[in-house]
Length: 73
Image 1 (spheres, rainbow, N blue to C red):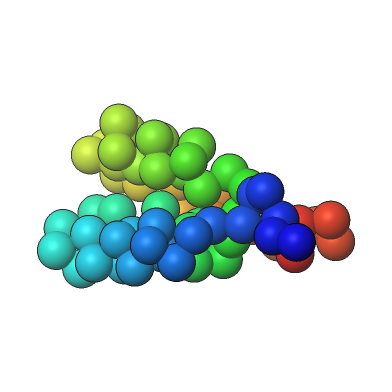
Image 2 (image 1 turned 180 degrees about the vertical axis):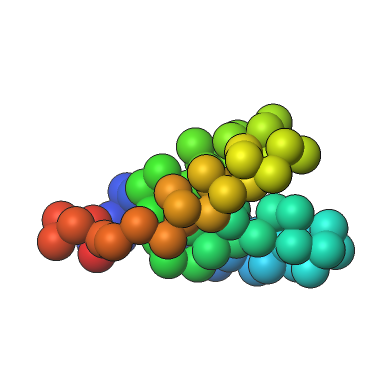
């Protein structure tokens, strides 16, 4: 049975392609999606809306790189 929080393959590919096309702007979201984080949507929103400020981009990157809890993966 598929975990309901597992990120789809399409979302992972889309995230990586968009990260490449935007010159790394959406890199935190791509990392979160590829790592199957439950919060990949939150990371994407922070990155999209606040990533233009360097602080917002760094916050999104930290969110995407946080250590996985045992119940997350």
